Length: 375
Image (cartoon, rainbow, N blue to C red):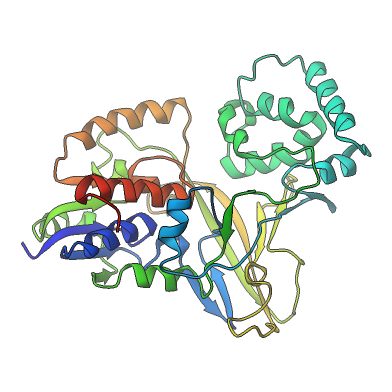
C-alpha cells in the first residue's frame, strides 16, 4: 500500500487529521470530489474580496488549545460578529440584547425587559418547553419570537417551529446587557488571507487529488491506504441501506456590485416569511472592507442564502437532528463501529452539528487516539 492514510474530504476535519498524521511522518493522500480544498470553509478572491463561497464562516472558540493549534496556520483578524435582523424594513440587533428589547418594546432597563418576557411567557402558559416555539417564547417572549425567530427558523429548517427540537434555539444568546458580540468567545476572528490559504498550509506534505468521488471508486481507493478517514455523509457511505438521513441544503446567489458599501454589515438576517432568502452576506466586512495591504476595496460582493430540503445530488449542509433522524443515525452508528479500517468524522461523517472549533477539537482528539500527543 502506498499510503498510511486516505483522507476523504479536504475540509477542516480532514485537514486537521492530515496535518497531525504528516507531523508523524505518515504518508497521506487527501481526496475531495470538489475541484478545490477547504470544503465548506473555502474562500475565493473576487476583486480583492475573500468570498466565503459556502456561506459565512466566523471562527470563535473558548478552547485555548484549539486556538493555539489553528493559529499556527494563519493570523486571525479581530472581526466580531454583530449581525442585524431585518423584519420588513425594521432593523434589530442580534444577538437578542437590550438594544433589541428597547427597539421592540421601548424598555430601558434589564428588569423591564425581563418583566415583559415573563409576562408573555405566562400568557403563553409555557412551563416546560416541548419544542422550538415554546423554548423561544420562554427565552425572548412572543413578540420577538413572531418577528425575529419564527419565519426565519422555518425558512432555514423547512419545518414548523412546533416540530423542531427546543435545543436548536438554545444556541441563540439572550443578554440583558447592551453587548452585541454574538459569540462572546474569548478567541474569534477571520484568518487574514482567507480560509483556503490556511488549509493549504495544513495540507503541506500530503498528496492531494481533487475532483475524485470516493464512493464511485471506493474499492480501488481503499486499496491504496492502510486506513481511511471518511468525512462524507455516513448514510451515503453505506449506500443508504437503512434509508436516507435528512439534511438541509443551502444555495447561494452571489453578486459583484460596483459600490463601496451595500448594507453596512457583514451579516443581515431577513426574518420575515415573504423574503425568500434567509440572509445577505457582504463579504468585505469580514475584513473591515480592506485588502491584505490595508487598502479600501472599491467594490463589494454579496451573497443571498436560500435554504432548501436536501435531495440526492445536492450538497448536504446541516443534519436535521430531530428524533426520527437521531434514531436512524444510531443504527448507522452501529455499522460505523464495525468498520475497523475507517474513521468517520466531521459534520456529515458523524451526522452532528459542529462549529469549526468543535470540528478541530474532535479531529485532534481522534488524532491523539491514533498517534499520541498533539503536534
